[in-house]
Length: 129
Image 1 (tube, rainbow, N blue to C red):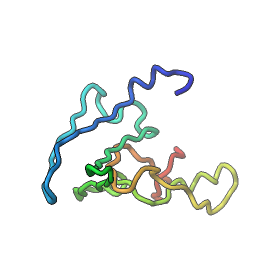
Image 2 (image 1 turned 120 degrees about the vertical axis):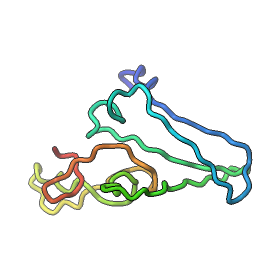
Image 3 (image 1 turned 30 degrees about the vertical axis):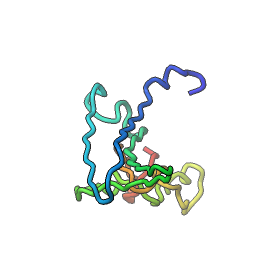
Image 4 (image 1 turned 90 degrees about the horizontal axis):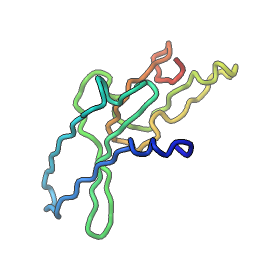
């Protein structure tokens, strides 16, 4: 971003502040995609990742991160952040066998991820296309 600070104007965050709610109270909200074209995230989706992180904070400043409610659709395991490894095939071009891989997501576990994953011949998620 250092070379093109204009790119920062496209980064978005959304913060919803509500008054104090009683314990056990449910809060519902909807997110809408506008002006990104035919897919979200826009552009080369194989290389981009967007996620939804839901947090709550107490008046004293304690913060909780909430996991999304899983819906049960096919492939959903690739749309919820976790501690799984991926990219085990990255050692192949370097001649390194049995590469352990790296953390697949790199964001807090439980967040909903919007991406289009690619898979190696063994069915593992990868960035090696």
